[in-house]
Length: 398
Ligand SMILES: Cc1ncc(COP(=O)(O)O)c(C=O)c1O
Image 1 (spheres, rainbow, N blue to C red):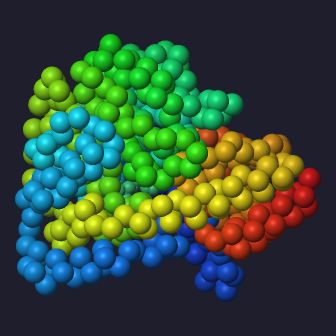
Image 2: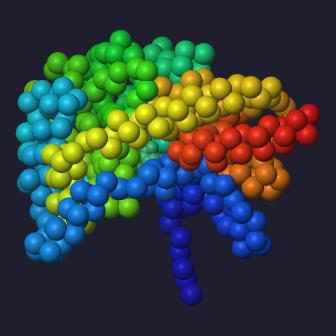
């Protein structure tokens, strides 16, 4: 067969899932793996009852047809309610919202609409990998700006400015951040908004962990921007515990209508993929207007797990870890030269302890190097066992 593989797909990788292949092989040999690699809260926290009922109700009341490509109007209204009332974005209307199959599809559509081969996309280093992979997929160059570990992984504003060129087509922010767990300071956000305005570079703010913060308040980028447009990304996968429903959204905060052409072209992209899962969209309306008590419960449990993770990791002499302020990830530094690189470390840890982490270079070869990511969603009991194993593994390898 003359199967031609397009060059663009050869560049695509997703460290979080790529490593699972090794773990599955061990599992097939009868070993029990502790997966601390995937940020799926649905593995450890049950979906709220009212949402399970809502999706059945949606199916039984006929929401089984194609939905409008931009999303169900009642969901887009509900999203505006949430973003305006809870996150303080001003004046968002249903027309400004596009429902996507998770933020993942939003990333693909946004970059698909703006990135030409040779263009550059500014992305936090380290970053959630699909921003890097989709940029490459469209032939653009992901340009990583430094986030400063010693300053709680806040973006380095000088580095952002230094890396802007004529080819820069987008500036991505992830707040709260995956993989570092940082929550951006409002002052830093204001500066990033000014940079976007000054250079006329579209600003994206991925806020999927907006409701999962511990000791610091979350500030939505659009809520503090006056005239600079912001493209907000968010969804239901994390705080509402329905990652498998694949419902997310993007909104355009665009008081001076500078993004009209971009918006129209992204809308064209939504039409070629028809729509997002209809019953799941309908049920997500209930996620916004229904009871919210599972969220403080989730955050309080995660805060205990965060505190425990932070304490234990810093007790292990070959590791150091910044305190995560949001999301459910810790991103410790490996303070030893014992391993060839962080991937070697993660693979050896998997083979010897059956713990699966993600290597930091999978989130950026420069700024993620020498680190690894731990998901602290599991119970303290599971985490305790994992950290004990990790500690003895590291002691043995000195
Ligand atoms: C920063 C960030 N954005 C987006 C996603 C994916 O979201 P969705 O399930 O809405 O595609 C994740 C998932 O881990 C994430 O960490």
